[in-house]
Structure formats: structure tokens, C-alpha cells
Length: 178
Image (cartoon, rainbow, N blue to C red; front, top):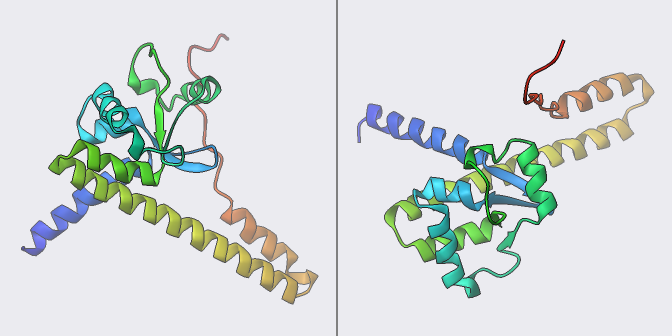
């Protein structure tokens, strides 16, 4: 493969990875992906994905998949995370953990499912690595702070502030009255 072709593949993979990472949420203390997002990535209808899972429910224990409760569903809806799913829904979406996502490729059985699944697994690994390095950095900072005296407290506080992710700007929905 030529250098140009390799770079093109890497760029496409990077874009796909970014799309996937934006669709991983933290629910019930677990990193999950939601059924409508997975269906879109796998290029199948959401109901087809859910039907395939239900036909093979023994492959999806509670630690692989769970259905959002009403409160979780309303919370995600209010954050406009799921607004792109369209109109009203009869049932709350399903959340799939990393193991559940891996199992989906076994029930969908398409080449696209395999390719997408590989990219999703890579995204989960990258997130795990980022979290681990962040925790490692915080641990090292604590050790340094204990080692040095109070004159460096300002420096340590500044570093901690830089390590804290910024709060997302929440867009208001609707019109403002002046």
C-alpha cells in the first residue's frame, strides 16, 4: 500500500474513532454505548439490532447490556444526547457495555459489523488508557506534593486545576425573552 493510501486509511480510521468515542457514555458507573448509536454505526435499523439481541438474549447477561430506566432516559434526552434519534419512542434504549458491544458482532454476522466492532474495541481501549494515565499522573502529583513543602502548594494547585476537564457549555434550547 502506498504512503498516500496508508495516510488516507489512517485519517478515515481516526474520524471513525472520534465518532465512536463521542457515543460512549458513563451510565451506572460503566462505559456504555446506546442501541440507536450502535445501530447507526452498524448500518442497521435500531429495531433490527434489538431483535437480534433478543433472539440471542442468553449471550447478553446484565453486565453486558441493560435497558435505561425512565430517569436515565429523561436525563439523556434533556442533555440532547439522544435528540437525533427522532420523535417519540415506545421503549427506552438499551445500553451495551464493552463486552456487550463485542457480543453484538456475533449476532449481527456481517463484515461491516466486524469492522465497526474492531474500531469500537479500539475506542474503549484508548479511553481506558487515557483514564489510567490521568490517574497515574494524579498519584504522582500527590507523591510530589507530600515530598515538597508548602512553598510549592500554589504550583500543585495550578497543575490540578489544569488536569480538571472543563465543564461543557450547555446550550439552551428555545428562545430567550428579553
